[in-house]
Length: 97
Image (tube, rainbow, N blue to C red; front, side):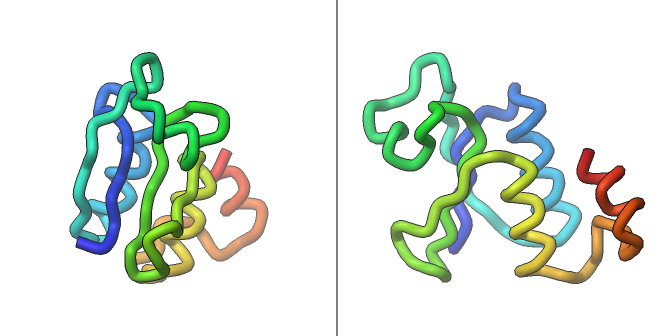
């Protein structure tokens, strides 16, 4: 699988990303990471130490993105169908909020 989600299903932010991937029909791997007891290497991909983070091997081995809102925006651009956000700029911003 080209996408790996680092984060715990207990996190609402990680679940948001996992739901986005599921709704878009994208297969992914999940590596359970707790931000409370993250391994040392996790700081390299999440400078603030927060989950989730995704790695997209299609882009490259170092292609990681932290922050659920940024990740979902990226996934919407990479996998535009089905669209999860409205086209109208205000409605889109409200959905992202």
